Length: 128
Image (cartoon, rainbow, N blue to C red):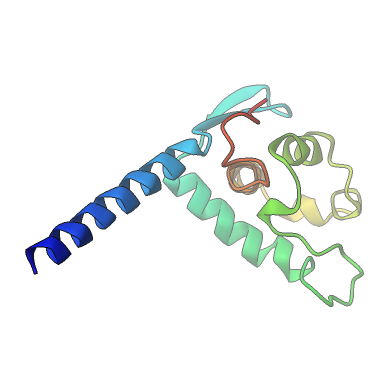
């Protein structure tokens, strides 16, 4: 029994350690090319960005949408790719005025979220 408890405690400790390492691998800040500022990726900003992305962007960018919008999720592109999307505003939805319904702060929070959870965000060797 004692060995079983010790093995369980060891497994939990290792799992928690791996979880902490993974959590620390995500970026904690990013340079915003559009505003030329450094943004701290706080939990609140990322949470707000997630909700804004789900309620604004995913209303069109979901599978089987009628608008013909590309299906998107945070890992659809890299951190550098998301930075380029928001700095240049090249997607059709930005060009046709849909992005104008969102404030600059809301767009920054969406970009923060997408950047933090991008395809390469959990690999500390990919930061640019």
